Length: 384
Ligand code: NAD
Ligand code: USQ
Image (cartoon, rainbow, N blue to C red; front, side):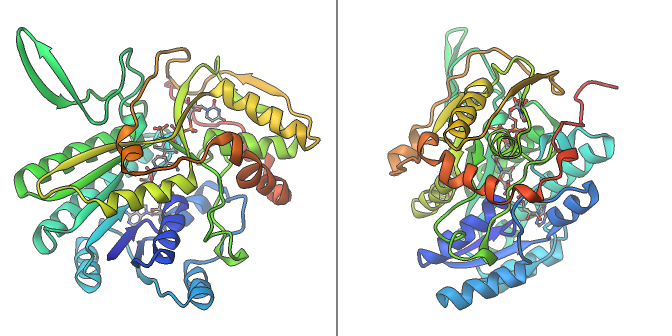
């Protein structure tokens, strides 16, 4: 099957492209490389030294004999997008190609606008390009668990059946996202659902939790294939950050009271979930939603787990409660469902098994590359 991975130079996209290529899919990567540009603008760098996309793909070909076709450009450029799709003729498109940091989207008006235009317009262009040339192609779109927020009831997978004044309907689950980035994902979901309804497209929205880890079978094959691992206050996510902080003896940065609970998954499960979605596509006209995560943890749970694992490696780790730069519930009910992917055959990796191999050991190996000035959060949700 021909699968185009949009955002295939990024953290989830690179691991997914190689995984699918290794499993016999005919993979193309489309990426504008804008994430590398944003890193330069922000003055931040991944912990792991990543090679250029050209070197990466060349090395993959040398190692495995498998070719990955490359399309460099922006999906906000409709002409480029349409021509790339026509050249590659995908049967499935996996769309990772968005600005994905909540703090980045909250820096100021310009970054909020950049995030929403980049994400919403890019996704809308893709919907039009599929409608016009590839209406049977399955769109697998990366959404986020943060679309739901933290409601005081159980979170279903995309839809909820509600009885109101004696009548019943199944409706999109209410969304209460916590940043302009998370809001862009809600807008995308609505646009995709509408396109499925009016044009009969087929799509799967993967509401993914926070991804952790750096190691997959393929990216671990060679230093030139290594994946990115962000630890800075803008792009670094909680667990990845904590491991790198532990490795350099920086106190773990728990925001607020640390009772914020989120859904998590190992990057090795990200790549498998995408494959499961592709293997069993949505029906024509169907907008399918899967909640993509394997475990729930509070931020305090995570900090304690990292501290305990670090102690076994002889590292001395403190936990520091910082004033929360975000506006979010710090103690709340959180019970999302994740049965759809498990039913399709997902066999989760659990954090307790991967904390050392896929994270702490990498953090220790590359700790000399850490810029300590990038660790504390600099973006505040409040008007300052
Ligand atoms: P990333 O920043 O590492 O990768 C995104 C890639 O998309 C980059 O290579 C970037 O250059 C490319 N891109 C961005 N805008 C583009 C455009 N307009 N045209 C072409 N390419 C473009 O991000 P990631 O962590 O790999 O996240 C990938 C997707 O998964 C995002 O949509 C994100 O919202 C979602 N997601 C990520 C996580 C996580 O924990 N990392 C969790 C849930 C959902
Ligand atoms: N947090 C800390 N300390 C830190 C970093 C974060 O306490 O050093 C807290 C935050 O306040 C928040 C939680 O950890 O409560 C998660 O923050 P995060 O930065 O790890 O993740 P988030 O901003 O939610 O975004 C990440 C990805 C995004 C994806 C999302 C999945 O960057 O692309 O959509 O995870 S989810 O959270 O399920 O929406």
